[in-house]
Image (cartoon, rainbow, N blue to C red; front, side, top):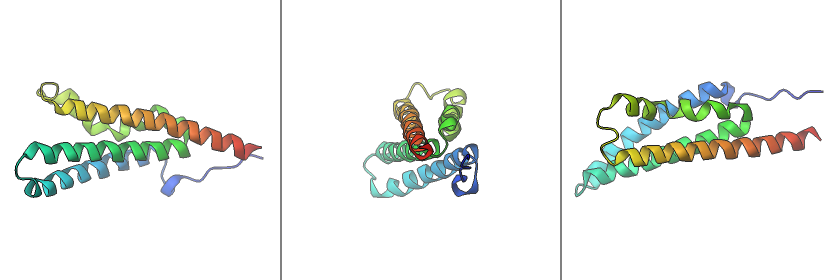
Length: 130
C-alpha cells in the first residue's frame, strides 16, 4: 500500500518555492527600508542585515520544502533564489560591489539547507515505510 503525501499548504514544491521567492524579496525590501531610519549612520548596514535575513528565510523555506518533497532538491533552491540569480545576470555592477558575497552566501546556504531537507525527508519516508 502506497501512502500518498499531502501537498504542503496545498501547493506543489515549485509553487512553494515561487511563493518563497516573492515573500522573501518583499520582506527584504521592508526590512531594509525599516532599518534605514533606525540605523542612519550607515545605510549599507540596513541593506546587509536585510540580505542576511533574506538568505536565512530562503534557506529555511528550502529546507522544509525539500524535507516534504525530497525530489524537489533539484529545482527549489533555483526558484526560491530567482530574484538574486536574475540580478546577478542583469545588473552590471553586481559582481563589483561586496553585496554579491551576501547574496551568493545565501545561495550556498539554501543549497545546503535543501540537501539537508532532502536527507531528513528521505529518512522520514524510509522510517514510515517500515
